[in-house]
Image (cartoon, rainbow, N blue to C red; front, side, top):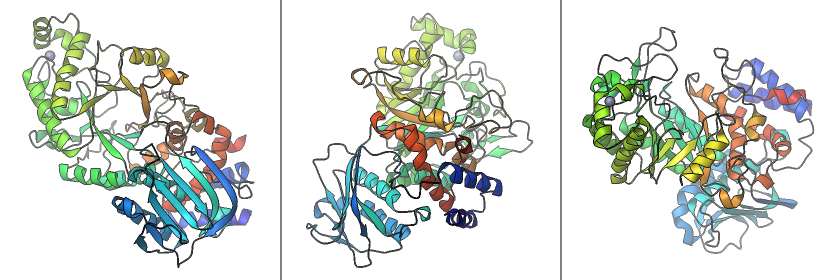
Length: 550
Ligand SMILES: [Zn+2]
């Protein structure tokens, strides 16, 4: 037993040279201490935990003679069925043909449409003596059924033939419709191919939105044809935190269109964020006239909140955003666009003659009302492009457009803010910084450069309650969850993976599984299978070795 585990680990090591020896050692100790019995237990170890699972006696063994039968009423699901075909090649090394057919009498793999399944993301997966039966009302549900099946295939630690699957019956659908992770290429540019790899992994855990923080003081990362200096000047900074190394990078519109199309094959929508009216030094470095007090600005080289906002009293600012929104909307077809709204100190607006004139003309008494006016005008532009605003929630904004969805994120007084959001009649996504800020360290020493960040351990993320105790009849305004990987200390995708996993596995259960169906005890027992997969696929993660000390 010990030998077979060591074998698995060294195989993974050979495949993934980036994994260092220290980490492998820690991981080995973790496995041996925490999961010595796991190979004997029969557990499917599916993350996120499905709604209903029944494991039956017996198993089905895939054979070369099997066929994948696709229901002729479900032919639009061809792309997903091809992914299923590829999955079986990858997991069991068997390449099965796809045949369109109504009957499901023959032994094999049967994919069919079941309009009785109410949730678009729901599915039913049965495995019995006649084979594998996957049904859904919609392609998305089928996709999630395939992700579940992918996790049911054995990994070497289980010492089961790779083509052998237990008899079972799973009925599944998500708790929340919106399950998201956020990456921050504004702080550190991430190449498109790396983001695709990130999408592959999140989709396997049934996340359906990737939020890209595309603009900030430290960099503007999206090509805008009307304003070429945004990328010519705004995408470059001379150094990062005093390292003396220039940093730059941006996405062309064509690259982003390709990314959107790729994400769609994984049933992930990309939410672009253009942060306004603060976090805009990269804009002002290129177009200083958009500031309240134009002068020479530089793309920021350090973390922190700048007091420079775009001027709410200049018509050029609204013209600027009209162009930006029209170009961004043409790349991202989804309904939501994130327009930032966080950390926008009002100091400059208080002093600016243009801002003050706008306040007088519109009978606004304080700058907080000017902020609401600003978002109303931006929202009017969004409506013209069939978009709804998504914003970081700030208590001091006088009011938000009624069609807004806001993200709860601030550490202080989350329950007070939750009640405010509810009473304002807004929709909410929970990204509470005390549980699901994945740029925060998972344990002591995780981020050597900083000491102000709280530790968010895997257990703390698992304890995340997306509705913060609100009873069901009151929590309908909460539509989902988001884990944020802010990029100040995340220089590349390997680090992003390290910060994301395994905490995003814990959040995946908070977003998908019911509270009744999930438990910290059971979750810990499921992790080893997923870590084996990460090692085999070269996905970086942090071994939660603190758990092995218990
Ligand atoms: Zn101004």
